[in-house]
Length: 105
Image (cartoon, rainbow, N blue to C red; front, side, top):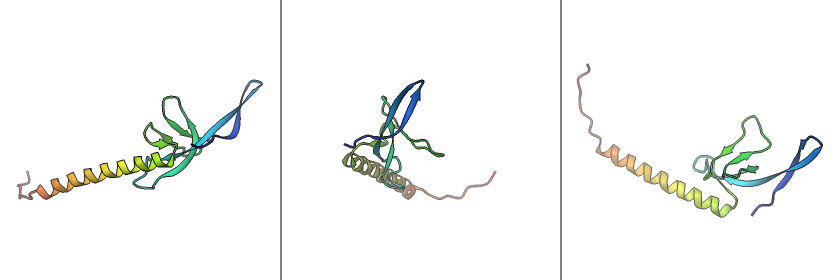
């Protein structure tokens, strides 16, 4: 498990509260860009937001980020298996396709 990084502070009136960020593994783009690390904060309902915000900040859903490398790899392998199954179904449909001549209206 990764330890949180304290990278900035939030001020509310005269109270200074440190913001804690953690580094997690993003699997949202595992089949195109690979698994990569992102730093930010998790919400109570399972979402993850990149912090500090950039011009194009990353926002991840519940099943798109993981705290450990092993969980991230397992998720990426599951995504790969689903994609392969989907492509096999497409190949079957294409092989069954019959081209016929039709009259244009």
